[in-house]
Image: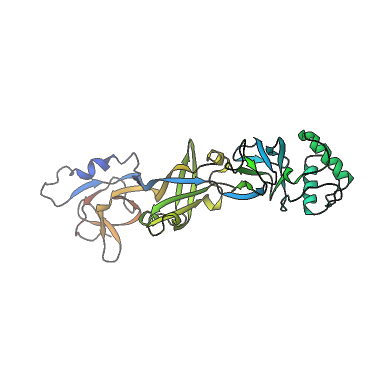
Length: 350
């Protein structure tokens, strides 16, 4: 449940006492009491639970057939070209960059986009210094054999379709499908097993329509994860697809000005589950100034607002902030006593 927080500065201790205590000398039968205006601050927030989750983007397909004998990467680990992801029948399966998925064995005389990608991998690992021209020639074969020796497999110069999983870009943070890739799992080839994580988690709040009205685009929010506090702002709203037909709304967040919310701290967000984080939404930004109870305000016929001085004179003011029965006003000094409630009085003196 949302909790509304009223921010009131330490200087306005009258909030719990003077507002409700008549000034000395005021007859008990009077229809008003008075309070002293003091310096302070007013603002409000609501506290909610935000969610953070990593989006998984399909990135690579397994072509190895056999039994998974080991898994080499943890969920969310950042991998670079040549990193071993897992092993099938004790043969390492590595990751490389490329748009063309592995679909065949590569050996002498092969040519094509997949050979270009292989040559790029071998070059990044220091085994190939030629031109990535897409032709599997003697230099490429020598590089493949050297690479195979580094992996501890037979150096026959043949790259099997299951030896490499090509993904669109590296380095990248990846997750393996743990329902398919685990020690002892049987793979047949063709499984979508490698997912890239989104650049950063997606942060959302699910609220009712009334609370959603308090969260227009640009609304500031502070999200807390362990000992870190991140600044964010509301970026948009849409109906909750999981509860269609209800009044639930999903509010999405972004960093101020579209920047990252969590930066280096994103690593704190769990990869394999939705993270639940404390979120403090600023519904009324904190404003500092002369503070008065809302009941001290009086509406004027011309649309203006005033407070009523102790002697009954109306003094025009400008309201700078208002939250939960308190206002910050401009046009009157701290220390002035005003009537509560305001009532019909003589006009302000010039």
